[in-house]
Length: 81
Image (cartoon, rainbow, N blue to C red; front, side):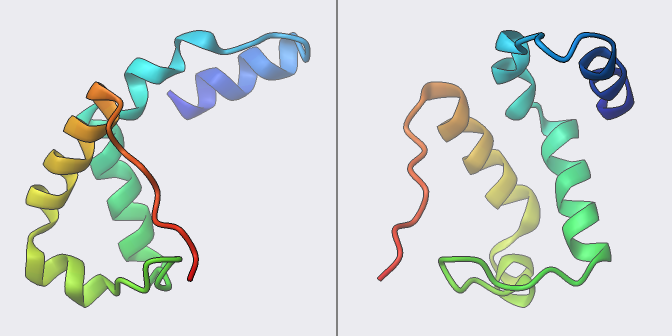
C-alpha cells in the first residue's frame, strides 16, 4: 500500500488522499507499523511508554484498542507535560 500511495503522490503532487482514514485503523496496517517500530527498537514517545511495557500489556490488546479508538474517533494523543 505504501508503494502505491508513493507512486500516486509522485504522479500527481497536488493530489489529496482523503480516503486514507479507513486504512489507518486496519489491523494489518497497525500490525505492520508495530513490526517496523519493534524492528527499529523504537524509542518511547511522548507518553514515555517503552516497547517492554507494550509487550507486557499485550501488543494485540493495544492494537485492538487503538484500532477501535481510531475508528470511532475517540483517540486523543497524549499531551506533553
